[in-house]
Image 1 (cartoon, rainbow, N blue to C red):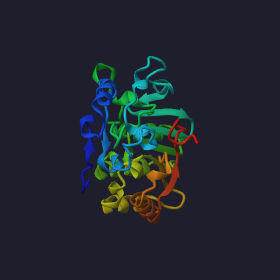
Image 2 (cartoon, rainbow, N blue to C red):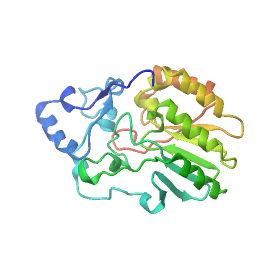
Image 3 (cartoon, helix red, strand yellow):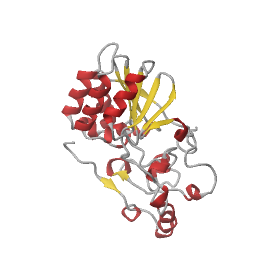
Image 4 (spheres, rainbow, N blue to C red):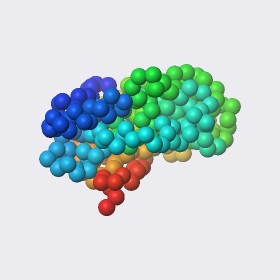
Length: 250
């Protein structure tokens, strides 16, 4: 990547009262905090109910002992390391184990658990992925997710896209990414990435970016410009987001 992301990883770098910070640090002993400086600038820290704050700032409720670390039973559909096959025509690839920010509601927060509870799940063997695709001709749709697919270096993303495109019955590649919200500079400052996507997104063989905007304030001028560049490169942009209390449930 031509420009490295600027992470903030310590709560002490945020404008929080000491009492609140000490309470939230108990959460980060289990689930880490990290976010881009870009996204943190969008937060109104003077408003305790700020919706963007609720997206990324730890919450003591995360330590309540209910639920499961794998709520979607993804382990049951894992056919090889980093690859899940739940629906006949769709293959999900955990291409990356990195994100530009940790959403506090993430259903894959297990990927970021501290200590022995966390375990690697991302794809390592690209050729094994290709062999699996070739053995399953009903798969027409491959999702490159994670983590965040666009946290991969462009060279690694090229390797994956080229490998998947060699399998003739795969029509669509979907990139699961929150980059447009957390780090639009990833798109704005990497013409090599845009050229890669342009070369491999063609009629009948489209690349889709499944973006993740949770709140209108995330649609900044930078994010809009990044969307425009992707559209000009032939990428189809979709959006998905959960309904989160205090963020977008009004």
